[in-house]
Amino acid sequence: MTPISRSIFRSPPILRIARSALIAGSAALALVAASAGGAWAAGTLRIGMTASDIPLTTGQTDQGGEGQRVMGYTLYNALIEWDLSSADKAATLIPSLATSWDIDATDKTKWTFKLREGVKFHDGSSFDANAVVWNLDKLLKTDAPQFDKRQSAQGKSRIPAVASYKVIDPLTVEIITKTPDATLPYQISWILMSSPANWEAQGKNWDAVAQKPSGTGPWKLESGFTPRERAELTPNADYWDKARIPKLDKLVLIPLPEPNTRVAALRSGQVDWIEAPAPDSVASLRDAGFKIVTNSYPHNWTWHLSRVEGSPWNDIRVRKAANLAVDREGLNELLGGLSIPAQGYLPPGSPWFGNPTFKLSYNVEEAKKLMAEAGYGPDKPITTKVVISSSGSGQMLPLQMNEYIQQTLAEIGINIEFEVADWNTVINIWRAGAKDPSAKGATAVNYSYFIQDPFTALIRQSQCNLAPPAGTNWGYYCDLEMDELFAKVRTAFDPAEQNKVLQQIHEKYVNEALFLMVTHDVNPRAMTEKVKGFVQAQNWFQDFSTISMDP
Image 1 (cartoon, rainbow, N blue to C red):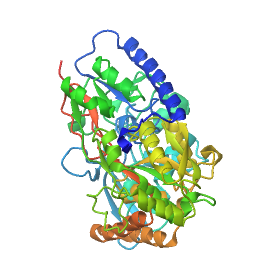
Image 2 (spheres, rainbow, N blue to C red):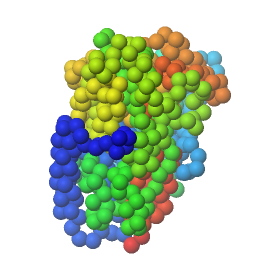
Image 3 (cartoon, rainbow, N blue to C red):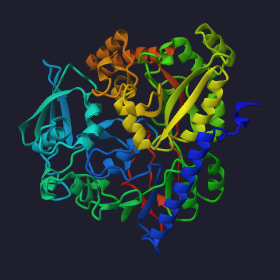
Image 4 (cartoon, rainbow, N blue to C red):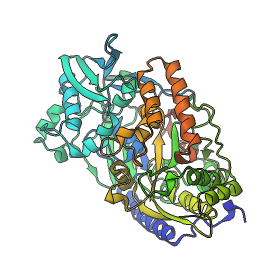
């Protein structure tokens, strides 16, 4: 029997979770139907998200990349953002609230950010250099009155390079890095600016701000939201970038974590757009007149392996064996062709791919040989635990995919138990690290990574001093040779020079099988034909400002 013909719901724990998710999804769908009421305005777009809850609204969002996409770059701006205007080329960094950023010619730790003049927050207060410092303090300065533990948990690990910062003048901010770091602009792109005046007006209470947030972004959240049910965003008619004032009357976000529930909501007209449709529904959705939009983008789907003492993944033979035991083409078939089977940690077209010598082929016999050399096999198996999600941003079909991998690894003597949690809980476990009690002894976590920039793609997962709580090196991997390569990336301010170093890093990632490298998503979305003007950028984030709805 070939792997693709196996039942994808054979494992009883997964089956119970899947049934629970379906029941929860049905309840969510009933809420959507109940709240839909009468006819919607032609300019209203209703999106069925994969998240199980409305992302944090105060500035730094939770719910992974999906939270940043729908509640981050909608309500807020960063100093630097991504060009999301094209489907045909990789997104690059562009000015946003900062019009320029420069590195000091004599001191490569000193950066100067020139800010955009005349920008207003939604509450009417002015954006300036003091607001930038205030927002950095809310994440990094624990004794600041505005420090917010929830936002800090989302944002602090994004900017580990930052040592200090100060106001130079009302439209100039200086940031000093701990060491020379060419990746700082990528890090800063994650940090969103919320209104200091609004925090004051809401009684200096972040819970109150959550119900009445104020950013500088193209959308507003004026009517509050209902947790786990819906949030309604409206256009910011006074947005500083006139070309990006939204065309829609309203953008409605509805959490629908179960894929079949999302499909049912789309078919019944209760939403207009869904993230990540169930792969087996794609053909019938097309036949029914729905649009399926896909594009390559910087994403991978991995198991992040623990390297703490006692982890079976400390043996390179076990790591390589696991990578050789995964039938990536079979998984692609399971996913209806909506994936790019991994040839490495980065996708094969990446300029940083290099020429790794270890090939991610499907070779069970070679995997068994490696396991035998390590002292294991089907008669003497390794038994270990992996943390996985039931759904979530970039997670594709995590229950089915992980159960598929569970079966193939069992063939070579690796028995996997799953610790299943909702996506936000998995993110918290990932931030806490493999040594934290929340991991419950797991030696891997299934995680989907945004891999568009050097820091987010490679450095934050694997640098020695970015183990929790300093960063998100979940598995406590530490290799001084790798750290030396990371240091070269940070001091390579020439892109061509930096790319050469990044190729060496990726070759080391693959040749040493540092992760279980499985697949890359193509970011499928299904939507009604009424949705017009959407450009699916080659990026985790998307611009909703261009979209309109036919009546």
